[in-house]
Length: 85
Image (tube, rainbow, N blue to C red; front, side):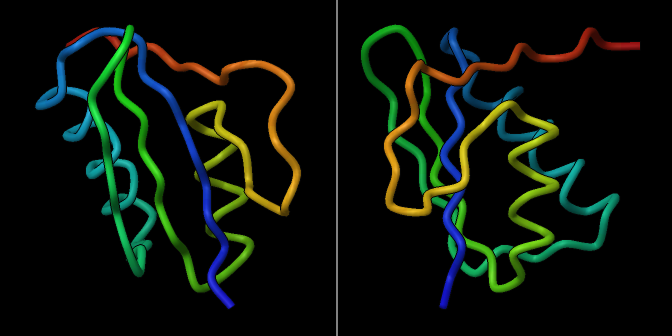
């Protein structure tokens, strides 16, 4: 069973937001089974599939997403790109 996390990034900086997600995943040695995105409306939606629920929960917590357990979120979850150092 895969655990799916959906996160939304408001803004259209696809390259930067994907880099932030990828860096976090690499730093935590997490390898998603699938990684999808769609661009539309006010931002970017990512759906990331994980084999381990603990990885999915950590990712959802970090990026203010929601873990799809058959329940729709009450509001749009969003995160902002962290400032460059």
